[in-house]
Length: 118
Image 1 (tube, rainbow, N blue to C red):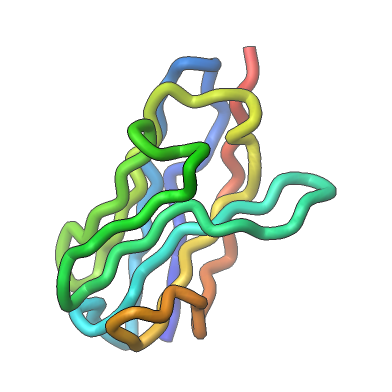
Image 2 (image 1 turned 180 degrees about the horizontal axis):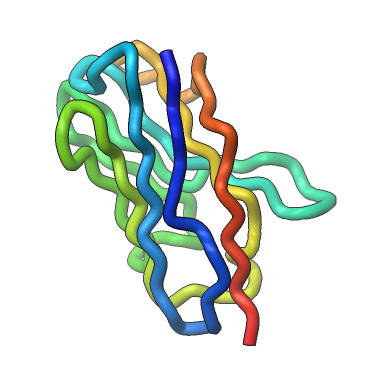
């Protein structure tokens, strides 16, 4: 099982980024795929998740209506991030768990840095 994130970088406030999580060793139809982030000095927090069997999505309040998670196919999950703010700066991690409801990851990617700054 492997998860690899990509798409991070430096962006100005108000800009957009699209993060991609590519998985190998499994397909995501029966998994909960999630994105988490960890800012310096803070705990890792859930950003969003999507349930493979139902397509249901959920977002933390601070990103709702700005970020969008999607399962593009059985091996790619993306996080579209719009209207980025400096407080979105963090390392973003992809997570996966074989479940129909539990979003706490059993598997993690290595993370990708997102920096929002003028």
